[in-house]
Image 1 (tube, helix red, strand yellow):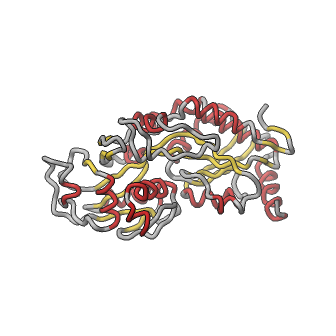
Image 2 (cartoon, one colour):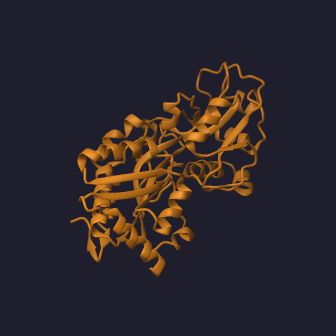
Image 3 (tube, one colour):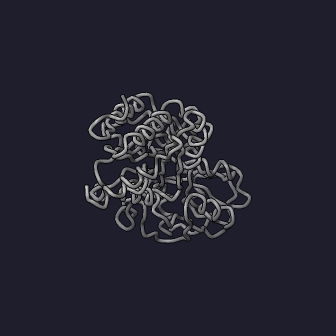
Length: 343
């Protein structure tokens, strides 16, 4: 660990523990799980009043940068950290899946009340700029009986480094060789067409205010703002609406490897929603302050156990039981001063 990194972490440790016995923990990152993390933080106050947790919803890219820099106790990302990004960290980072969420394709098309059915090919064509109007054949052919207007399509995308964008673009790259070649996948890409917005909140606002808009956001934001949600064709050829149950089907259909890093896009279940992903907390395996390390570990332990009862009500899906067992083993790897922070 560099002198600067050690100074940052020691300074955080000094600031994080106060004379009144409280411990302050700071985190930053993904907007995708923000509704759930806000609920967990509020509920945890009654579990352990000595722990105060602050979480900044700044996007997965920002969360990765801050945990690598050592300026937060935990980062949050909807996709695993890249090896190149992790090289700048002060030590090994653990990926801890906390819940399963769905990315929703939503739209603002006046007069369309039934959920639109969209194929992977149609989505790629829209975001590449080839399908330009709502009544175009790639959309109309799978929505018989729906009166689609001759209205320009306005694509909306995320401008910040976003795990939601990474989930969405990885999906497009998997279903469209042209997208994979010309645009690629990641938290930030060069979008071929459209208008940008910051955060899931910003995309939601653009969708609400722009006639003809189509964009992607997290299911909880779509529910809270009463946005329509497209049904997407999954790998089994079925059109499936986003839901907690469909996210559960995706998660239970894919075995979690020991690294705790996996994609759910190719889940084989007929009832799986294809734009589904785990969301992660990023933690340093070795911490300098045992008290704060224990407080963080106990909070995360609570989220993957008791905290899971709040998940479905917010449109996420709980961790499969087998994944919880794997997370338990991972959290027991957290150390401070060579000693485990959880006994």
